[in-house]
Amino acid sequence: MRVLVTGGAGFIGSNFVRRALTGAYPFFEGAPVRVLDALTYAGNLDNLATVADRPELTFVRGDIRDADTVREAMEGVTHVLHFAAESHVDRSIADGGDFVTTNVVGTHTLLDAAVAAGVERFVLVSTDEVYGSVPTGSSVESDPLLPNSPYSASKASAELMARAFHQTHGLPVVVARATNTYGPYQFPEKLIPLFVTNLSDGVQVPLYGDGRNVRNWIHVDDHCLGLSLVAERGEPGRTYNIGGEDECSNLQITELLLELTGNDWSAVTHVEDRKGHDRRYSVDTTRLRDELGYAPRVGFREGLDRTVRWYEENRGWWEPLKKSVDAR
Image (cartoon, rainbow, N blue to C red; front, side, top):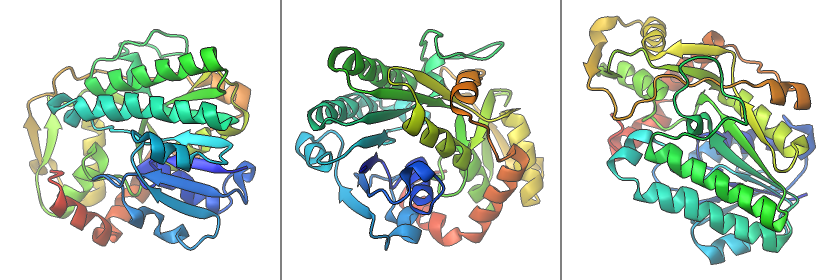
């Protein structure tokens, strides 16, 4: 087995690599892991520092849109976990061009190379946002895709391309749609790390609209556990929802973060709501649980507390990022 992890220097991808190389997933134990990452603003080799000296790990700096680079990175690979993506909704609203070329064209480039290389399993890491807003109940994998942002539309497009490669070429593709993921090493533009780092610096935190938008939250360790099961035993051509057990509104998240950082509501600024802001996401994880034996291990309050402490103790990691890119 040889594993290619695209976007493996990013938040979720690096978590998967670190855990795979340190024995968290028996299926991947001892397998060589090749990381392909363009090291854009959210990619950071420091995310792999704890495993950088592992002989199983090799790193290739390159863009998934570059066919020659992808072809070389794919040589000898049996399993692909495709994390690489533009993923920040606000950025997609401001300018969606990179989301189309990276998330759609880049995915096509990888799929094309995977067919040529005879890859045994291709896992596309997607998002619950492809379902659109869910007023009641929870989305199941057979529900229609109704994306409402340029970001989610680009991920839905990538999924359709992956499905086409499975149907047309027989490429063993599996899609994983995960909920809002949080934890250490997340670039400080997303809600939780943005709020924690701002509060650490005495900077106001921006709360969109009325704050009642609801999300299901999953710790990055649980997300990657789900992906490891999908990569090992997921049925080609199928999609699996990966979610946690906790739903919270942005108001509730803000209240918890204020409590954990010793702040109060005077640190919060209400700002105009995001365009097309989906009100609620929720996924049904029955398929993943029943077919692959998945169960999340990190409760939200526990995981949030650990995450806050990590950012408080690792200012040296996030402070340079906030100085180089205006994440506020």
